Image 1 (cartoon, rainbow, N blue to C red):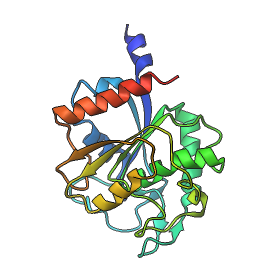
Image 2 (cartoon, rainbow, N blue to C red; image 1 turned 30 degrees about the horizontal axis):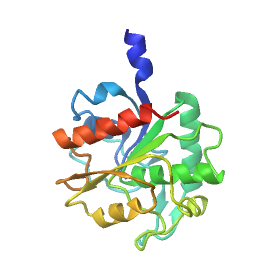
Image 3 (cartoon, helix red, strand yellow; image 1 turned 90 degrees about the vertical axis):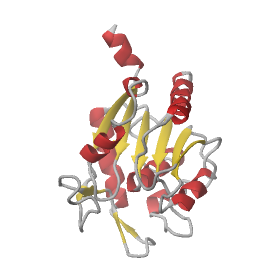
Image 4 (cartoon, rainbow, N blue to C red; image 1 turned 30 degrees about the vertical axis):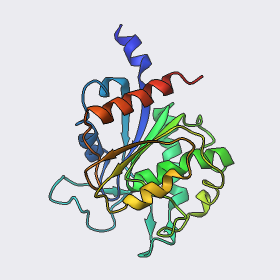
Length: 221
């Protein structure tokens, strides 16, 4: 029975936020209620680069802290994005296969590009196409606030049909960017929460939406 339960779990690669870590994201996600967590096989990856500046969580959580890629101060030019994606693919090959990807903040921006990069055949072609993405405090490359890494230049050229679940925080500093990202996905599922730039806890209504999303993923061919 235990093997059957394990096989029914969705294996999800989890990508943390800017200058945090997989361990920190794990602590935040594990606050989610029991009816949900047993359905998920969560794997947490650290970004490929040690933080190149002070983390906003320094003093709250223990280092080390990591980042996925770098940018200029205006968020218009990005550096090491291709190298980052290559490291993610390497991790997926070693620890996968994965059904989907969950990302928070900088990790969410990266997560949002994955279906498009796979569709365009420019990256992550050695691994199966992701069946879904979960995006918390996300934003869109190519929006008014952010430039676009070359590798992801066509990620949003056509609407993304990959099923997506988005967390939008009422007081999130990038709330509007998260809302803008929804337009790039076909039929996105959205959980609104009263918190800010964080992984939210789930109330009964949010839990129901999340579990329904997971059930529909299980029903995919």
